[in-house]
Length: 80
Image 1 (tube, rainbow, N blue to C red):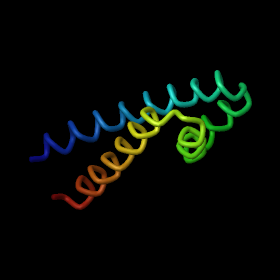
Image 2 (image 1 turned 180 degrees about the horizontal axis):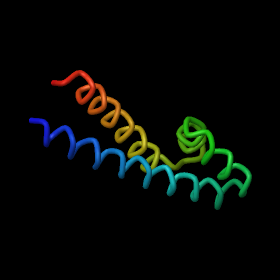
Image 3 (image 1 turned 180 degrees about the vertical axis):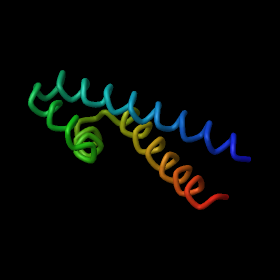
Image 4 (image 1 turned 30 degrees about the vertical axis):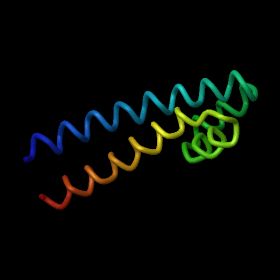
C-alpha cells in the first residue's frame, strides 16, 4: 500500500506543477505578462484568475491534482 501512496504523490505533484505552469502561461498570454508572473508566485491566484478568464479545464486539472496531492500527503504522513 505504501507504493500506491508514493506513486500518487509523485503523479499528483507532477500534474500540479505542469498544470500550474500551463495555467500561468495561459494567463500571461491572455491577460499580460505581469498577471502570469504574479500567478506563478502566488499559486491560489492562478486558480482564481484561471476560473475567471475561462481557463476552466486547466483550472480543474490544477484543483484536482492539488486536492489529490494533499490527500496523498496526509496519508503518507499518517503512516496509513
